[in-house]
Image 1 (cartoon, rainbow, N blue to C red):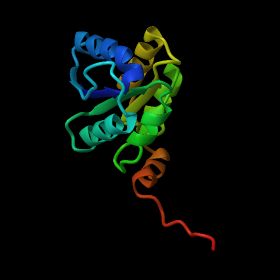
Image 2: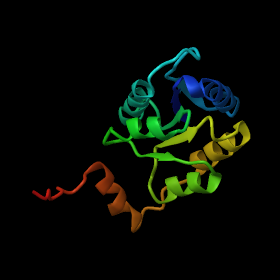
Image 3: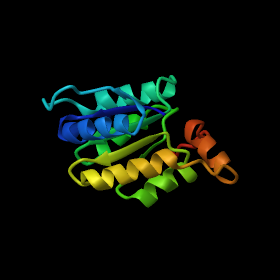
Length: 150
């Protein structure tokens, strides 16, 4: 599978570990940075990752920052991205099964390497169930017009 991965400085070490591990597993990894642990802004890397998944350069993405929250918000700004912030393998599996997530986010300060690998494994092997979930997922990229109260 072709997987894009990106992080901020707080998750640089975990990104490096996961990218190497994914390559060992036989995946084609697109490392979108950063290339060092120097301070960077997570939105820049989240946007890069979302674009790589949206334009088809990657089938799936992995987004990492200190908590996972900021970069997941950045990724989800793109209408073609469905980024799920997880901390356990079951949530990672459900993100695929129910939400057709195409990007997995994790917090490097909150999750260890072994748990991160378990989450990535569940995410990569999971399939979208479709069915009743299909119309819901469609709404994520095409939200209905919201009425505004005045």
